[in-house]
Image (tube, rainbow over all chains, first blue to last red):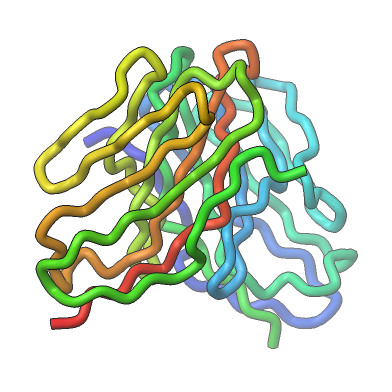
Length: 112
Length: 113
């Protein structure tokens, strides 16, 4: 089945540690996105990539980094510079054309 | 600048009621308006979508009403069920924006048995 796989489902980070969240899609979609969702809140865009080897900052990129070396993969690194990283992180992708996004099942990151 | 405003933030209805969630947009270039349903701990899933050349679209118990002149659209859930309890997001996109979605702030719906 085609879809987006996010891993791990749960992740715990110590203070001052970098962690990387995985996002893989087998939908052959060109564009991929990372969103952050805080409890009871909406979706805030962190980074997005419309094509391989290219990506742009979203509304809340500070403290995060991404790479897009392959079409199917768009990992997100939460760096120690992100002071409040505890949140639910969602990856999404969409094809050319206005068909809306497909979302992954999310990664819940907690700082311990 | 929030380009898609969604209301209400939360909504409680009894089983069988018809919750209505409203969204308003500013960008007249928007040409595709999807709604997403999100259950706790899960990613949002596409529920129903509409283009501005039609005023209404129905899929099962879900209906989108679209008013292009007012730049507003709404989601109606007929005969709501407890299983419809979720967070609903409206969104909009324009072909000239690379189809990147702009989301509303979300509505938490609770349907009481």
